[in-house]
Image (cartoon, rainbow, N blue to C red; front, side, top):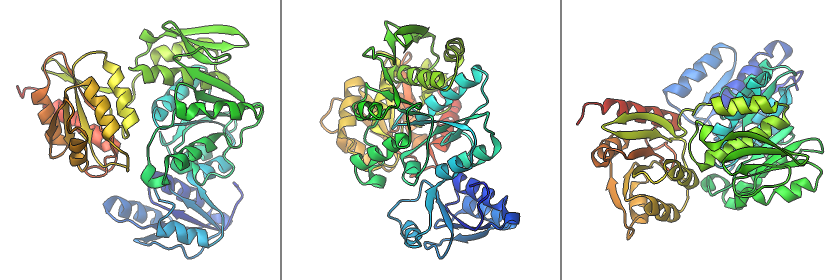
Length: 457
């Protein structure tokens, strides 16, 4: 693939699309022609377009048709049913995702992490553990630099730790991580994939090309992911089962409060749950999965122990955002689906909570979430495009629902509700695209708003 030449067409001007285009432009001298197409508009898109045009790419904005090409690389955010994708398929040339392109370009070993929730934390933690063990490990995919950029920069001695979404797997044809993890599967992105079954099938494709000698790490506490363990093991792939509730042979699990890795019948104790700096039961599961992945990739037990103790919470994942008037604020802006919200609710014991819910729904029924939130707290602030939907879902439940105009108003209202000793957590359960460019912008805005609260009372 590194020697390929021809007409490269890139769909989308996001980070992955830009990285794919940059690879093509780096090969202009070898006869690669680059065309980038984006059906959108806006200042950010125009700025990227100008930069790529200055480097020799043809850029078509507001376009929904692919006219020609020898290889098409589609960004993950483009829906399979869009006019742009349908025209690309009609050409009959290879149509792949950026993660597939990166895999074909790379010489490094791949570790891939997927699942509905926990991907980012687990990917960052695996990277941290491998670096602690002395490996040249780099995060890629949905976390860190685009995968194509990392693949071109990292040689065969390195390890790429990729956070892989269902969107990226739709057009992944040969992607073959030597270590792959499936953390969980719960309803999400139904509006994109059409059904939970289709969504799950794309997630499970992370194991499609694994062979004996490879390792699959699967959380068996989650019903959606557990079903894949036995079928994958039957192919001769080594399956490391992860559980907080069971003690699977050859897996990663809890022995009391101690995280344990078992190998050939021998238990290697790691650290106690209290030594982890990341909160919640779900992060215990993430730590177990990360330990299993890092071990499969060659990390020593001592390095895993040290790494688990030193890993810090990452931005937008139950990230401490400050203390105001005796109330702790947490930024969990990455909680963009109901299951992620449920996991956030477990992170604070029995302390009083005010939960901020809102944004743009992804076609998910919010009634089950409302019932679960109502079981945990009496105070909810709803905001954004989905506020009326949330308010309806909480109807009849023993919960005080306060409606806000947007995030700024939601933080101010939560500040007025929360009492000293309680917790305010932004765990929206929705995407941010009604008000922000992404969950990152939403989370950073939340932290700014919390910082501005000082001195209000």
